[in-house]
Amino acid sequence: MGVVGSCRAALKEGKFLEYHEVLYLNQPEESVDGYTDAYLLKLAGQVEGLRSTAFDAAVKNMKYRDFVTASQKAYERAGGAEEPDGPGTPTAVINDKRIPAEVGGVLQDGTAFTQLLQQIHANPWEWEATTL
Picture 1 (spheres, rainbow, N blue to C red):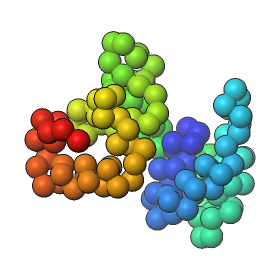
Picture 2 (cartoon, rainbow, N blue to C red):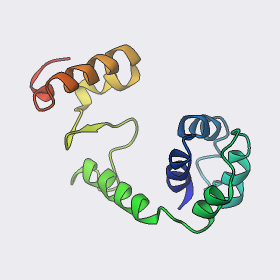
Picture 3 (cartoon, rainbow, N blue to C red):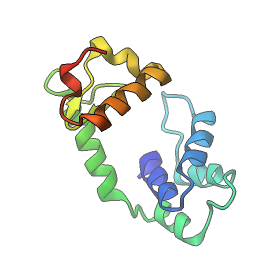
Picture 4 (cartoon, helix red, strand yellow):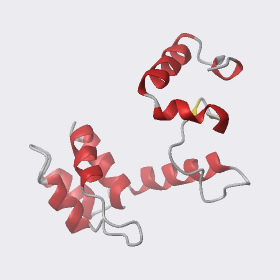
Protein backbone atom coordinates (compact mmCIF):
# COMPACT_ATOMS: atom_id res chain seq x y z
CA MET A 1 0.00 0.00 0.00
CA GLY A 2 2.88 2.32 0.76
CA VAL A 3 2.84 6.07 0.70
CA VAL A 4 -0.44 6.59 -1.18
CA GLY A 5 -2.39 4.31 1.12
CA SER A 6 -0.90 5.80 4.26
CA CYS A 7 -1.69 9.29 2.95
CA ARG A 8 -5.28 8.19 2.35
CA ALA A 9 -5.40 6.90 5.92
CA ALA A 10 -4.02 10.24 7.15
CA LEU A 11 -6.72 12.04 5.16
CA LYS A 12 -9.35 9.95 6.95
CA GLU A 13 -7.86 11.12 10.26
CA GLY A 14 -7.86 14.78 9.15
CA LYS A 15 -4.04 14.94 9.15
CA PHE A 16 -3.14 14.67 5.46
CA LEU A 17 -1.27 17.97 5.10
CA GLU A 18 0.78 17.46 8.23
CA TYR A 19 1.65 13.87 7.29
CA HIS A 20 2.46 14.78 3.69
CA GLU A 21 4.88 17.45 4.93
CA VAL A 22 6.67 14.94 7.18
CA LEU A 23 6.89 12.42 4.31
CA TYR A 24 8.27 15.07 1.98
CA LEU A 25 10.92 16.12 4.49
CA ASN A 26 11.99 12.50 5.07
CA GLN A 27 12.11 11.05 1.57
CA PRO A 28 14.38 8.05 1.15
CA GLU A 29 16.66 7.77 -1.86
CA GLU A 30 14.69 7.29 -5.07
CA SER A 31 16.70 4.23 -6.02
CA VAL A 32 15.14 2.18 -3.21
CA ASP A 33 11.64 1.92 -1.82
CA GLY A 34 12.41 3.01 1.71
CA TYR A 35 8.77 3.60 2.60
CA THR A 36 8.16 0.40 4.50
CA ASP A 37 5.10 0.15 6.74
CA ALA A 38 7.38 0.49 9.76
CA TYR A 39 8.98 3.67 8.37
CA LEU A 40 5.60 5.16 7.41
CA LEU A 41 4.29 4.51 10.92
CA LYS A 42 7.45 5.96 12.46
CA LEU A 43 7.00 9.14 10.41
CA ALA A 44 3.30 9.24 11.32
CA GLY A 45 4.43 9.40 14.94
CA GLN A 46 5.83 12.86 14.19
CA VAL A 47 2.31 14.14 13.44
CA GLU A 48 0.46 14.97 16.61
CA GLY A 49 -2.71 12.94 16.92
CA LEU A 50 -2.23 10.82 13.79
CA ARG A 51 -1.12 7.50 15.24
CA SER A 52 -4.11 5.49 16.43
CA THR A 53 -5.28 1.92 16.30
CA ALA A 54 -7.40 2.76 13.24
CA PHE A 55 -4.56 4.53 11.38
CA ASP A 56 -2.00 1.83 12.18
CA ALA A 57 -4.41 -0.92 11.10
CA ALA A 58 -5.22 0.92 7.85
CA VAL A 59 -1.50 1.07 6.99
CA LYS A 60 -0.65 -2.49 8.06
CA ASN A 61 -3.76 -4.14 6.57
CA MET A 62 -3.79 -2.14 3.32
CA LYS A 63 -7.30 -0.84 4.01
CA TYR A 64 -7.14 1.54 1.05
CA ARG A 65 -5.77 -0.94 -1.49
CA ASP A 66 -8.69 -0.32 -3.90
CA PHE A 67 -8.10 3.44 -3.69
CA VAL A 68 -4.39 2.98 -4.38
CA THR A 69 -5.08 0.69 -7.36
CA ALA A 70 -7.62 3.12 -8.83
CA SER A 71 -5.22 6.03 -8.33
CA GLN A 72 -2.40 4.18 -10.08
CA LYS A 73 -4.62 3.30 -13.04
CA ALA A 74 -5.79 6.92 -13.34
CA TYR A 75 -2.17 8.08 -13.27
CA GLU A 76 -1.20 5.64 -16.01
CA ARG A 77 -4.20 6.70 -18.14
CA ALA A 78 -3.07 10.33 -17.79
CA GLY A 79 0.17 9.38 -19.53
CA GLY A 80 -1.60 8.01 -22.57
CA ALA A 81 0.10 5.80 -25.14
CA GLU A 82 3.24 7.95 -25.13
CA GLU A 83 3.80 7.51 -21.38
CA PRO A 84 2.31 4.14 -20.37
CA ASP A 85 3.90 4.30 -16.89
CA GLY A 86 2.38 7.70 -16.19
CA PRO A 87 3.13 11.30 -17.08
CA GLY A 88 5.68 12.17 -14.40
CA THR A 89 5.49 14.95 -11.89
CA PRO A 90 4.15 17.46 -11.56
CA THR A 91 0.99 16.54 -13.44
CA ALA A 92 -2.58 17.75 -13.00
CA VAL A 93 -5.66 16.33 -14.65
CA ILE A 94 -8.83 18.37 -14.37
CA ASN A 95 -12.20 17.12 -15.58
CA ASP A 96 -10.38 14.22 -17.28
CA LYS A 97 -8.19 16.70 -19.21
CA ARG A 98 -4.46 16.92 -18.55
CA ILE A 99 -2.91 20.35 -18.26
CA PRO A 100 -0.74 20.43 -21.40
CA ALA A 101 3.04 20.61 -21.17
CA GLU A 102 3.15 24.07 -22.74
CA VAL A 103 1.23 25.46 -19.77
CA GLY A 104 2.60 22.95 -17.25
CA GLY A 105 4.67 25.69 -15.62
CA VAL A 106 1.45 26.81 -13.98
CA LEU A 107 1.90 23.86 -11.60
CA GLN A 108 5.16 25.38 -10.33
CA ASP A 109 3.64 28.81 -9.69
CA GLY A 110 1.25 28.98 -6.75
CA THR A 111 -0.38 32.20 -7.91
CA ALA A 112 -0.89 31.00 -11.48
CA PHE A 113 -2.24 27.64 -10.29
CA THR A 114 -4.66 29.37 -7.91
CA GLN A 115 -5.89 31.54 -10.78
CA LEU A 116 -6.36 28.44 -12.94
CA LEU A 117 -8.37 26.72 -10.22
CA GLN A 118 -10.54 29.82 -9.78
CA GLN A 119 -11.10 29.95 -13.54
CA ILE A 120 -12.06 26.26 -13.57
CA HIS A 121 -14.41 26.73 -10.64
CA ALA A 122 -16.17 29.58 -12.47
CA ASN A 123 -16.32 27.74 -15.82
CA PRO A 124 -15.64 24.03 -15.20
CA TRP A 125 -15.68 22.84 -18.80
CA GLU A 126 -14.19 25.86 -20.55
CA TRP A 127 -10.75 26.14 -18.93
CA GLU A 128 -8.83 24.26 -21.62
CA ALA A 129 -10.08 26.61 -24.34
CA THR A 130 -8.42 29.65 -22.76
CA THR A 131 -4.81 30.66 -22.67
CA LEU A 132 -3.02 30.88 -19.38
